[in-house]
Amino acid sequence: MEMKWNWRLWTGAFFLLLVVLVAVFGPYFPFVDTELKPLGVIRTDEGKFVLPPFPPMEGYPLGSDHKGLDILSLIILGAGETLLVVLAVVVARYVFAIPLAVAAFYSTFMEGFMHAWQQLFSFMPPIFFVSFFSGLPIIFFSEIRPVWIVLVLALIEGGRVAEIIHEHMRQTEKRPYIEAGIVSGCSPFKMFRNYYLPVVIPNIIVLVINDIGRVLFLISQLGIIHIFINHTFIVQENGFLYDVVNTSLAWPTLFMTILDDVRIYRWIPFSAIAAIGLTILFLNLFAGGLQRYFENKHRLVRNDL
Image (cartoon, rainbow, N blue to C red; front, side, top):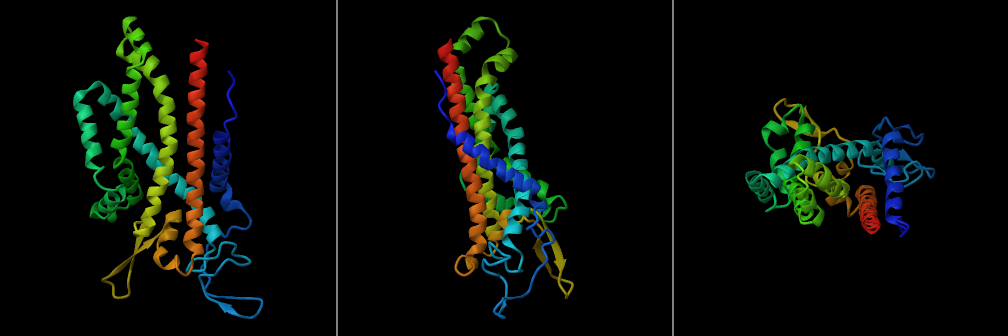
């Protein structure tokens, strides 16, 4: 039995590779404005003066933002930071979720803790909890705010991921060859290493890819409600008040004025939506292709037996 062409896997992998290459080498592209100098006005060939945000035109293929910064350059330069934040969240989430799921599989107490953690953060959308925790003074004024934000984003859905992994282990426990391992006298550690891990790991890999897209979608909402991954404080002239200024180039920052831009300057939010939406699409294709690959591989092994 031969495997059929897995177009989802290869299509997703190809375009995700392009995204990674843009994130890594994008700042070296000759057409990218790495200095990001604001431009107050430009003069067209017809002699007219145009104020920012500039619409898509020569020199600005995707237009500019309200400061006159090239949108294409912002997206390319922000790709690396966006992916870095997303990957940091996913890594932290699974560092928490995998041990929790394994502990819950062997301990009734930890299973109760896992379910309680999931219930605690599942009765409202995750963006609500991110808004609440990011506004706490210990996080809002912290010098390591990005680290706090990553931990918050990771932990609020850590229980959900742990429950999914835990369920995979429970389903694996019902398979016939598990009984064979028990009868042969395998220790719990050997059972876990030789019988559970080979089945659960492919499921975790697919889950991780899907979670990358889920986290990307979640952080894209942060720009709309003006929650920044990193920010600084600028004291106003009176010396008593301060402004919170975003210092991040991540894609969600292009959504800060989306309510006004979507009616007039549509190219600003739509460019970010396209970058985020296409990346999520490629991730979903890749995850679907991986799942099909693992299912076919398992089917071939079972047929050989």
